[in-house]
Length: 229
Image (cartoon, rainbow, N blue to C red; front, top):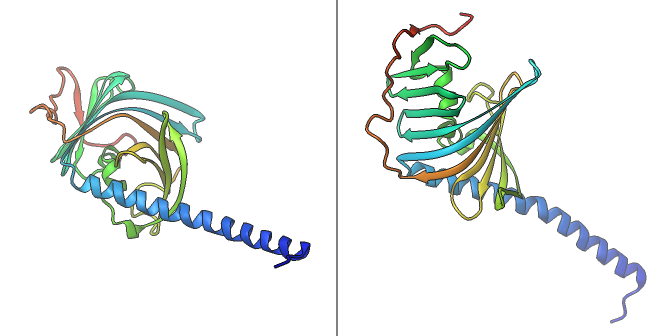
């Protein structure tokens, strides 16, 4: 069958449109599949040990702060963040209270807050992202992006109900080879950007018996009120 130049051009355009239309759909399906896979793995994880690097960019103050440390979790309700940079800072949720001890910025004071305080939500960021029903988010993205040399899918989560979770938008870079996030970014209502790179990830880790115990250092004052309140 003879094809005229005009017909050939029309066919090429039709194929291009079909391919371009299929690419976003494939990425979207990839985003939802990747999120479902990592959330399912998280639901079966009781304990976790991970190391991290965190960068917080505050546009209101024009300041950027980078920290590093070790993150421990025992579900439900227990978390411990021990910073190696700045050394000595620690945040512990023991299931009853949230202890926030940051001598690098507020020496001589430790905050003792309820387990469901706003700070506990930040400490249990993975729980907020992976335990919240997926129907609560508009899921998009799905394009492939390497992180530390590993193939990941970039998955964006936007809450359908503002205020339901403590962020306006979150992005997960989900490993294609393992059901785990490689990087997490959240933007809160003030525009503060918190990006966490999870440099190691050990689900099912055996944790120390005192991992979620906090002892108030000698001479340190205990406060039950957030600064400015």
